Amino acid sequence: MTVNKNIQVAVADDHNLLRNALARLINSFENYKVLFEASNGLEVKEKLNKHIIPDIILLDVNMPDIDGYETAKWIYKNFPQVKILALSMFSDENIIIRMLRLGAKGYIMKNAEPEELKLALDSVMHKDFYLSELISGKIISGLHKDMDKPQEPIHLTEKEREFLKWVCTELTYKDIAGKMYVSPRTVDDYRNSLFEKLGVKTRVGLVIYAIKHNMVEI
Image (cartoon, rainbow, N blue to C red; front, side):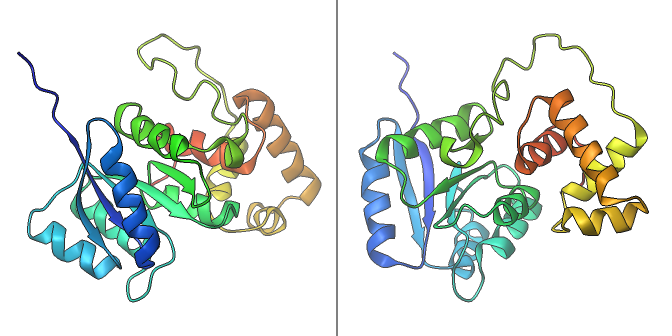
């Protein structure tokens, strides 16, 4: 008889009550078990360096000492097999973009319902990506489709590719226009063209496409 292996999860958040509540909730999910809790990035590093390795880490973006950004960057470099699900109170697209570029597989809000956390963990574990509907709307429609199915290649011009790389930074569209030596109106044209070609509706959607297709370095 085959015994299902529990999916090991780490919870990193500096608020004790929230962290403990999240741990209890995750332990209540079928086939999930909390491996350890941490209140900052330093504690996460200590655990991983002792080879206490979870499958997924639920990682708060804002923590003291070593925050979620630095922790995610370190995890991605040293333990890339650990899937990062970012946790935050904020839905700011710059925060989302930065965490995705640092290796996070997903992003979930702290006010999410328990059912959504379970969905997020399942998606990160089995589909390798998750963004909540609150944040993404329909920008990831088709993102979780079977990647083995043949897909028509999407042709992007050199300027569109260059624009897509700049979009994955924290520069504003006006700043991007300056970097590309074009007018803001031209940048708007690049953006709208990519929205239509890639079937996305927001800047985050463009970033997701670029990351998934290895068009930018994390």
